[in-house]
Image (cartoon, rainbow, N blue to C red; front, side):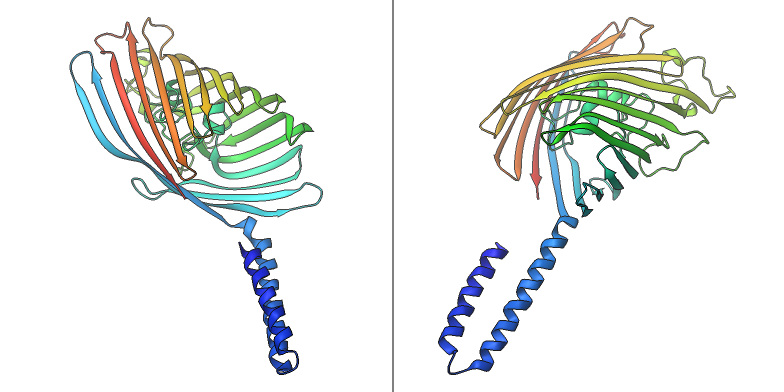
Length: 377
């Protein structure tokens, strides 16, 4: 648009020069100077523009749930209201680049979600510092809330990757933490690397929180991408978690009691997954397991879906989660979702989930219906 305006301005200037070449040469010189200044400003802005990209989105929804015991819940709510400033500070001729991102959420109160800087001198090695997504799970890192095919993340991811308030450690950090990470890729072809890695150290306490002990969490991920549309990943995360907050929370942790002389206990998460997506279909599956103290848990989900006319997607998902492998109870969620994007800055979604609790006491099965509208800018 700016170049079009400059072109029109140049044509007008040329006409003015022609029309006034005899009568007012002084005015012609003034016009020439103005055009030169405008062109210079345009060149400066073209150089600065990649470093300042402002964007954001608002997600509002309605949830309705009815259970087998006859209880129901119904609520409108604001899921997310985020603004982001990001950009490339510079890009070198040899492939070196530096970038940053600042993202805040205004949903409940001002909260910093992302605050990081990256520097990658070569494709094989880069350094990222700040607050960002922990490199565990494909769904956690590669699918933000405006890209996810479903309204809700898989239960397995929510419970084991600190994605929600139902996380086993009691940490709801949207899969983020504060730390330092090395990353890079090898065997580059057609714009992507076949082998990619991420390895980092983190506080382990969630977003906007200082570390509460002397140890650090370690997280790493290896991704093999044999073709552009296919990713195969393996990952691990481990460290210490606050034992006090888990007292009496899970049956497998009955050994923990308020009188126990134990402030922290070890935990780990490990797993792998596969992700395939092209212009017409998408499919993804991940297995995640680990221990939280003496509590051993695991989960697996699989989803598949189709895309239509770059505007509509439909998908189904099966999500199994076993909170305590030493007990008989487990949970299976069956979900179906549809999303429609009438134009670039608006998306409408609906999702139905059947929650089945097997051998978990008197916990009733539930039916959940979700609606969400996303407005982007």
